[in-house]
Amino acid sequence: MFNINNITRKNILELTPYSSAREEFSGEASIWLDANENPFDTILNRYPDPYQKTLKNAISEMKGIPTDHIFIGNGSDEAIDLLFRAFCEPQQDKAFIFPPTYGMYEVSAKINNVEIVRLSLDDNFELPALDVIKDQIQSKGLLFICSPNNPTGNIYPLDSIKEIADCFPGIVVVDEAYIDFSNARSAISLLTNTPNLVVLQTMSKAYGLAGLRLGMAFAQPEILRILNKIKPPYNVNTLSQSKGLEIVQKRAIVKQQIKQIQLEREKLIEALKSISIVQKVYPTTANFILAKFDDAKNVFKTLQEKGIIIRDRSSQIENALRITVGTAEQNQQLIAILKEIKQ
Ligand SMILES: *Cc1c(COP(=O)(O)O)cnc(C)c1O
Image (cartoon, rainbow, N blue to C red; front, top):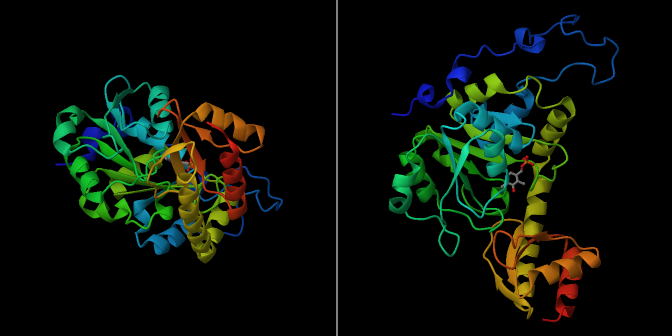
């Protein structure tokens, strides 16, 4: 039923990709005179591996997934943009989202001149039953499910994701930027039986490398072949590849930090619940907490004056603020100030 040729843009199917020097020859050699590089060693005088083989091998081992199911981008934001360019014909295909959610899907859609279709979550920000949306999602393009969702923090059941993917005629993108903070199973486990699924993860959050720009897309090889065809040849630089490899090898440290953040998250939730100006604390499995306040603007402003910056999400959800879980000390300072704010 799923045929990659039916959902890929015609110009992309027909494209002959740029062939870089490092792609035409990637074997062993002692003298490299093919890429117009400066021959004097600066550690960085050579172009990076266009397909990041060493890093992919390490990620493959860590995730238990073959290397041909892994794509690495300059942040997951690059993967999102490439997905649009590959699979959304401008002014024809559509991008489906479940707001409130991550803003980049809509921005990327607009940049690529693709119409956005907003589907409704229920009052608890849970996915609607398939019956409710089935008829609305019968056009080609991309359907984004952010799980755990930013900014609400809740995670969606894999069953619901699978059901939606099976009935959507385009590609379903499950953005798992925060999955490492939940103890839930990744949608990667659905890949074998879901040919139209792309799972995004990132080194920007739990792995502590937002400055590095390393995002991962996991999917069947036929989807990733298309992304590889259109990506900038050297999209992940040498330093990012080596630092990424290092963190994969030292992931015990990351695990430890995640445990600490999870612990702090639970403490912060309890503290917030005890504060009178907090109306509601939403359940979260991410490293942030969405909470409703009596007067979000005032809380936001007061914190800012004291040098504490949180995210004002009141344009998306009335009186809602999103708070990233910090260190124990940072969270205590935040709570101390919140306790002093009067209604
Ligand atoms: C932070 C975040 C990302 C990360 O994007 P990168 O480009 O990898 O830094 C992706 N998706 C969501 C929902 C996020 O909140």
